[in-house]
Image 1 (cartoon, rainbow, N blue to C red):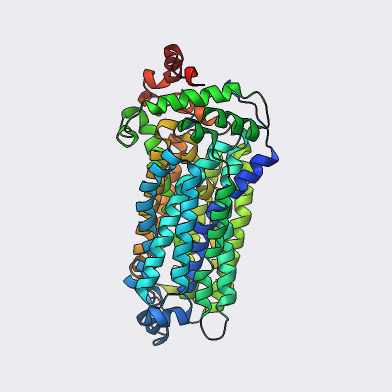
Image 2 (tube, helix red, strand yellow):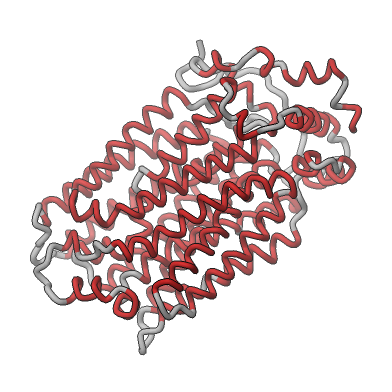
Length: 520
């Protein structure tokens, strides 16, 4: 039996290929799809701590924040309307990701990215010119539709385009652009909050048109992936694209394997129904548990509501926004660490190290907040050293997430699905992510009010559970070609029993039938 959670090292199929300037540029442009997601995460928390924004749309929250300085600090932002403003986006992203699966499978990855950019653009305009709460929420829903399409297609595009030895680093470009989007949003919030007249929030929300334009224009110039072209019957075009992105003339072995995978996928008439088959249990475990655990690290609590959270624990408005800029910068730098190490150290190492680091930080932050705020939420005067300690450990926590569960939560699911269920399974992955992002955003302010500092211990419990899951049940996928990924499941101590003989030898059977290569 192989080591717990791992795969035995041994000879596997290796496709030749170079890290060409063409593939780097292609992956960088595609990864810009993460900008829209990151910008929104960063911007929404910032504007909800701006007084002019609260006064115009959420006056009850504004009064709670200012009228009585002795009020329970844990509960001052507890408003269902304010929560709906933040979380409506993720419900929309959930719904659109299900539609995006069909678009991505039938029309390719490019149209899905293009549609995502256009929808996000429309939502940004509506939010920037909003005059009533309903305009804000409708705009957020449009933003959510855009994010659903982008998050469905971009990770698949990157995993299918990148040479397998560099797939981890190039795919994490998506997470890097999310972190850059968060950082840019935090910086803009800081400066826009200082605009006299109180209309800076309009620039913050409307500024989302910039990443939307980048994604929309970029997707017009991107080539589609060879996998997607083969899936739609464009064999010669697919071969030429594969030659170009690999920087080689002879790509026959990889091309033929892609064709065989496509032929197998065409035998699957109902990919959604087939997801329930026993042989796809390992894949469905990844598609559901990884995004579930990613949200229950508690990271979105920090990133959505960082300004609100820092304001709650005693920072002024400016100081809370600046603290968010600091955590955003840490986020970007730590993601670069992941890009460097993911194909060297492996996915499991980063998951396990990140989980341990997050757990320690959550316990310390809970202790710090509990010691000063207690149960009643009235801290009195907070010394500077206290603020520094809280921000320091939140930054260490963010760094741990940014080189582990942040990028790997998108990378690992996108690389383990076989082609016949890839679009459907990725939709499940995005949908689960958005369901629990919505849930956490919807209940966070209420949980903060009732659980108080125990909220951090609540998420710490889940970090323990997810780290145990990774240790025992997630195999290493480093340096495995994407169409050869089933070998990791067949070699795993637990998942091997779900991999049927027919599934394991599917490519061999296709060769015997002579169906695959006839189409080349």
